Length: 524
Ligand code: GLN
Image (cartoon, rainbow, N blue to C red; front, top):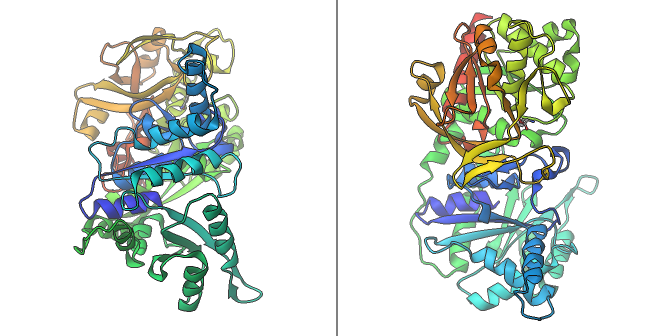
């Protein structure tokens, strides 16, 4: 919702930022299982954030920052650190005003060059843990004044099939709950499966104290790319500007949205990509990856069918052939832990031997190095120290690296939260490499989230096995990209390119990968 509204406001020429408030107590989602919380989205400035920030970034094109996502955990951590330092000068530290003040500060932080800040509060109205956020928003609205802030409430209008009826009661109840917290919504965005008839809209308006035109139906859309256009057709951006008393009857420029919808909904080709991973039961665990593959398809007007394949299946040769043979390309995504690694390595061997386009991301690149080390370079027990002690740590712990803030150091005993190599780092690409031609540049910057890296003590043996280190950190110390020049498309990257792909600006590696899959689809 916030991402689509941001896109509509931008299309009218406004500068926007979107922020997400997560009421849970984790300091950030970095240590949460992808099964609990979906993917962890990493920003350029190295924050591990909620996956909604990925949507915001993809829809608005504005790079998200650490200051765009805050959890109760982070707020309490900051407050308790201040309390221990004695910053409160003997005061009793309380939810109101100390926690609410911190929340208000986050809401307005770094906002000088903006027209609108969109703050999304996670969870549901009535949750105990979101109360301080609601209270902070109530205060903020009072402090900023009526035409400087508005409140939009997303509600559900369920359809009861047996009665053939839309039910407005849940919306009425949740608005009542919200107003009891002192927040009267200006706009209601009503999620519904069926069109909201005029009389139901009028009923919601009357019960909820909202103008009828500001009760906006939000029907399930054909795709996420259709949502901004649909909200515009229902008048969301008009109503928002009206609530702010802004006179703006110019039509927004939505041409780029029409263009990507056309590319997405009217494809001319089709490819099937096998993603061999571990968290395949929950699509949100690979949200950005899914989007980046679709963007790569948009670049070629191609429908991308993604087959999520559990790596553990590939421990037998038979399954590999039957399940991977129909794929036009194979991708191994990032991940943590040993489970499924043998299946990943076997899939990489299959892609390498059969000349099927292969893309390895983060753990996927590390597995591509283990595959080469074991099956070509003759290091049969090559492994990664992530999976336990090994005589041949072809992948090892990063203990020291150069960041923008100086040298960072870690060891086996470091905390797990927030201690990986995180955020944007530059890399230099070899002249004449496949990746340099794909990026059309020799200098790139990509986002990282990993604790281990290819151990350069094994560089010579890996190179003898046909892998080339075509991208390195600028100091030449850390391997960023490997590729196989004797293969049509075989690239492994230590970073997460999917985090920077946008529908209007598909990431070059994903666009090229889908191009290679298209070529492959014509061969088979
Ligand atoms: N587990 C690996 C590491 O920490 C890879 C991480 C990832 O794929 N994001 O290095």
